[in-house]
Length: 208
Image (cartoon, rainbow, N blue to C red; front, side, top):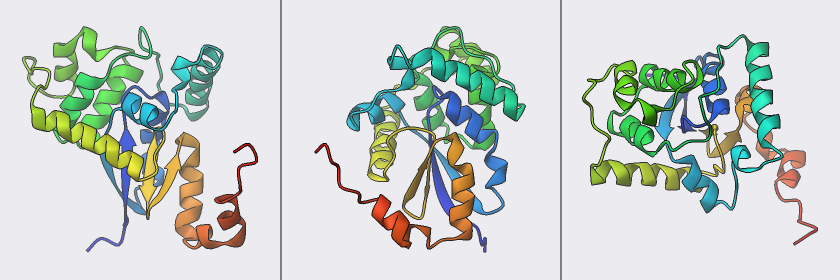
């Protein structure tokens, strides 16, 4: 029986930060049994009254250039796709349909963030890149569509408001820069019950 703690990783291949996260997931895998779950980031953002950085004009170049810098610092191959953001519905449905494991998921991210391509513009090539037949169709199965929406709704219920989001013991760790926080929490599992953390989680909103 595995002594690892179970965790859920919510992702959408649209996110460069999710890409940078999965390239560092080895830092957690000796402690966590991480299950990757595809969602639709746009749906999650709308349901939590949020926006992605690509939708905010002033934030867009800053965020994109920060991704380039962070990849350089980490020594991770990185190339922005020809346009961003782009629709990932078909790709996320495909990963849902195929119950994508980590190797397939990583190839999907590599297609976008190493090859710098939009799957919608070369669907057959994308499928081949994943190790699937070139004649694989864009998923239209109602059950697959429903499962992807259910995944997204579950992410919200689990406390996710963006990606990458890692859920461990009902705690949501959002962002590529929370890997160290996750490791500290696993070494100190009572962290969120400590007075300073408990207070920080319930500070009254002075603008409400």
